Amino acid sequence: MVKMKFGTFLQFNPRVGLEPTFNYILKVARATEEGGLYSLWISDHLAFPPDRGPSEEGELFEAWTALSALSMVTKRVKLGPLVSNNSFRHPALLAKMATTLDIISGGRLILGIGAGWFKWEHLSSSIPWEPHSRRIGRLMESVKVVKALWTEKRANFEGRYYQLKDAVSEPKPLQRPRPPIWIGGSSEEILQIVAEEGDGLEVGRKPLKEFEGIVATLRRHCHKAGRAIGALTLAAHCTAIVSNSHSRAMESARGVAEVMRISLESFKDTNIVGSSDECISRVEDLSRIGFSHLILQFEPSLESLKLFVREVMPSFT
Image (cartoon, rainbow, N blue to C red; front, top):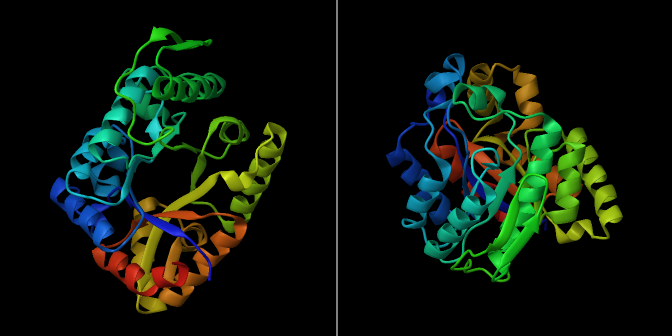
């Protein structure tokens, strides 16, 4: 039997059924916990352009604030941003926010963090947009800064972008030695950061062949860094449409693909779609590649989540 942990990803497409309200977020969170899933994630975005607005992606709540609220209505599931945009917050502030969530949740934080990729989102809000190399450099340093503040009584760091001078960050996180850090992305540079500094990789919506290439590249970087890839958690996220029949799943998938402005074939190639048996087969493929955690955006309704819990998850626990 293949082992796999599952999580729920909260980002809404109201045109295909999910309500962009906090009350609905609470419903999804409770269903995630009651269903025995391992984790619950919220995307970290400020806005989408008008032509990709509420009719397509849904209204967006601030990730860390929402996660703090959800920590009060859940008891077991791990909580994290998918993934926290490094451009939005100084790493010293991020370390404090993450510590706070870890403590109030009883030690349930997974820190997902990425370099930031959405140029429009930055420019529309006057947040500096830097070249890829600088964003990567900042991300590498941010991970080191957060680790130092989480684990050292007086933290010192001298980087190109960030500096700490006898910095104090108390209290420390509840988890020991510290919460896990999963780094989002799939570029060569991101995979190098994962191999050198991360506890896990989070990557989304790829064909299986691309996932295989990503894992092979990460294994190469791990070898150079003197780490075993097995020491890392490999997590993938995608949309999941589970139905009692293939035809019904394809009907739902067609609607979601139209909202995402991609072909049905492309949607099927990069997500989990179909009957329970078809979904089991897809999860087995991801496990074979090396992934041990799957984070799912369930569409078009909570029924897809409940069916997944009943008919797919038991094959992997």
